[in-house]
Image 1 (cartoon, rainbow, N blue to C red):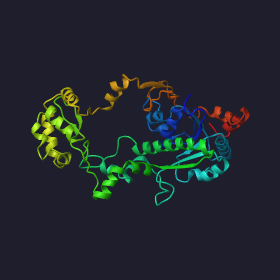
Image 2 (cartoon, helix red, strand yellow):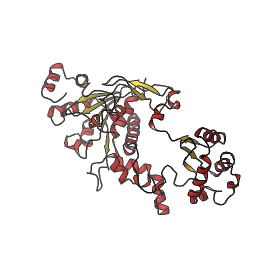
Image 3 (tube, rainbow, N blue to C red):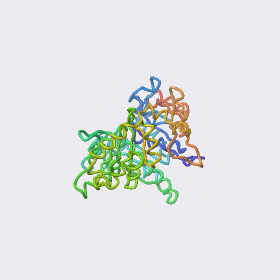
Image 4 (cartoon, helix red, strand yellow):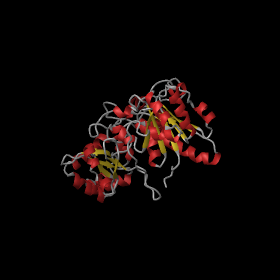
Length: 394
C-alpha cells in the first residue's frame, strides 16, 4: 500500500514546478493524469533530446509515473472531458499562464462550486495580486527578482544557480500544501484552494539574507564557494589538483583544525584567527594561510587528516563523479524506469520509508493514456473515435 493509493490528481501542467510536485505525488501512489496540449504536449518534452537521441532530460526527471492525455481545451468537447475528469478527482492542479485557467472556465471558485471536496492547487509566478501578478515568470527571472542571483557568484559577478531552484522550491511547497489539504479534508470533508508562487517560495528561502539586510543594512557578500559569515568554509587546493571543501562551524573546530590538520597551534589564540568573527574579518589572510598548507598534501592526505580531526569536508565533484558516487551505488540509490525510449536510469526519491516503496512508474509518451482515461469517465469507443477524428484528443 502506498500513502496516496486511490487519490486522483488532474494536472494542467508544464515545465518544471508543477510537474515536480505531481511526480512526487505519483511516487507516493497517486494516480496523476497529466493533461497536455494536442499540438506537442508539455513544452518541456522539447527542451532537449539528450536521452538516447529522443527524450528530454527535464521531462524524464519530472514526469515518471503519470498518465498522459492530450486534450484540446479550446474545444467545447475538450472542456467537457476536463469537467468530467474533475468530477472524479481529488486534486486539480495547474500552472498555466496568468488567467489562462479562468479563461477556460476552470478557475478555483467555479470548480469548487461544482465540486466542493475538490482541492484546487494553483501555481503562479508572482501571486494573483500585486503589480506583477499578470507577468509571466520563469525560473531565472524569479531568481533575479527574489535577489537570489545578487548573493550568488563570485565577488566580481552575480550568478544563477545551476538548477531551477525557484521551480523546485515552489514545487516542494505545492506538494506540501496538497498533502496538508488531503489531511485536512479527512477532518472537514471539504476541499480548499491552495496558492503557491515561485516568487514567494524563493523569497522564503532567502530568509537569512533578508534578515541581514533588514537589521544590518547590507546583504551578505558574494564569496564564490565560500560562506559569507563563516571562515574557513570554502574550497582549498591540493597538490594533486583536486579542490577540497572544508567547513568549520565553530571555534572548537578551528582549534582542532589548527592543531591537527595544518599544524599551527599558535593560530588557536592568535587574535586574527581565534574567533569566527575575527577569521571572517581576516578572510584573505586565513584562506591564503590554509591554501599554503593544503597545497603540500594530496586530496586523500588532506581528507584523512580532516577526518581524523573530526572536521567536515567534501570533494568538489563534477557530474561524472556524482553519477559514479559510491554513496549512491553502495546504498542502492539507483534504479531503472520505463520510458518511450526504453529503460532509463533514475535515482530513488530522498524519503526512505519502512512502510512502502515509491511507485517509480514509467515516463509517458504524449497521449499514451488518452483512451484509458476517457474510458474511466464513461466515454465509450464510438465517442473516443469521434473525439480523435475531430482532433479534440490525440
